Length: 520
Ligand code: AMP
Ligand code: MG
Image (tube, rainbow, N blue to C red):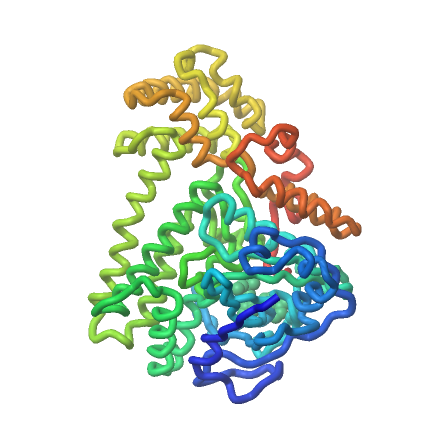
């Protein structure tokens, strides 16, 4: 196997003169060279066959002991150059100073035979200069979650970093899962994640905050060259910031469409390419609730709740604009980029409304119809995913008759709440039926369009948790099985109905299913 690495980030940008994992503040440099720390007994637990083949890794290599060694951090392939990036960020609204890759180590930028550039990055591969008080490791549960969700999001059509592999380390990691002063050993794992670029908003914020403006400019120009090759002409930096705003809006629009809650939208977790990045205490909406967040660390203020994500994305872009300001003579070009987000958002909202409701296009009245429905879903405790899939299968000619709610029955979590809202829901369905008839869209075509926007299968929190429990007990096959289902999220998959079921009662308040912490 002939692999070509072209480590542009490391080659073209200033390095920390010191190598190794000694904890330190790193000034005047964008990364540090640091090798992964080997682990006791690497074992491949799961891999993405799409990603493996995209990278040019054949199945024999993937199944070889060497693959597990490399993607646990015990060995390097020729051409790899391990580094940890130096970045800062705003965490929960506050500037946090230097953060950096505390447990991520990039191995190198692989250039495939097709000419694609993919950076390979281990998460949980040991300490770096940026590990602060932590150990640089990741536990099996959070690694399974990152591995599965990266690929699930890709198959859902949501921009995301990808995952190549999940490797068990054979070593325990000590974690205080509930932050209650009782740390316990858990199994460790390493995920190899993959993206064209792992540059974050925070990579720009740190040099800016330190007044290192030449370094900041160097990073911007590098990022434009390597990660935005489609941009050209004068006003390149302005165009680039506008493109970042566009991509961020698009990413969040997808999150809102599929019911994904990131959970920790700090600026160090915002990709410059508009990819979903850093899967931590993320979650999926079961019963529709715009105020929900899975992140227990954020449960009081709910800064990163589902419904706030578009606003938070804009706030984060504003922080990025602030960081870039020293590179511009005045604020007009940056304001123009932010305005692009502000004007794109209502378009995204309409498009999402139209796609999810099966309308050819949505106007203000349709948005109002949608909002009325969402309020009812919340009041009646209705499963978001099941509801939309159920809507596409309704016989709308009968929507104002009593049995109309039947196909949607599986979407309700609470009988009393359902009964209380049933009359209002029927009224709403009657309004909806009238609206749909106006489009004169053949029912089969309309249904196909709806089913292409409304997944049947999402990575429900409890499904991931079941796969984790099995993997922790020594059987990783549940991870592969779940990945297999998530490869075709919009298709009806006969025999796999259980994976589309609403959250069972046992999972309602169970750790890992409805509540997650950052401690992973
Ligand atoms: P997160 O909120 O998970 O994106 O992490 C925020 C910061 O904490 C980043 O700089 C991470 O690299 C760092 N971090 C999180 N967990 C660990 C860990 N176990 N060891 C070292 N650094 C960590
Ligand atoms: Mg992070």
